[in-house]
Image 1 (cartoon, rainbow, N blue to C red):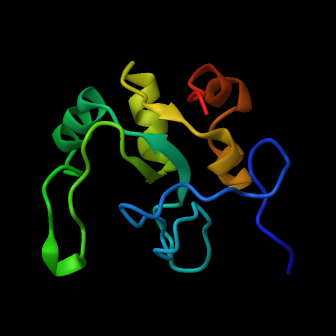
Image 2 (image 1 turned 90 degrees about the horizontal axis):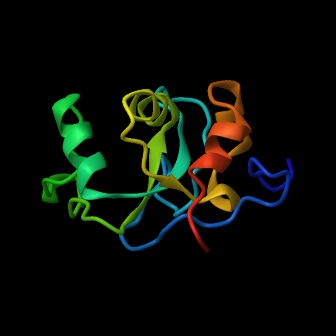
Length: 122
């Protein structure tokens, strides 16, 4: 099994290790068995997006020490579920995306064109 691939066809880059993100909590937005949310999109959180996500029932701002989750603040990078990103995009609230750290399987749900339109500056 080779290295995971990003949406640009290259090697998947690390999204973030502080806070530690990814379904496997290894800093990478890769997916596998058991990842029903498909945490494949590396985002840069914004206050607007965090508020939108909380309104949708996914509060990413409140710390949950029992899960070693510090809560996100604007500017944090995070592996987000691809369908949550799609919902946010359709609502005009999509956060920027780090393309090099977004897993290729995200393209099964969103287009590269939409991801590129929200590409974060590296």
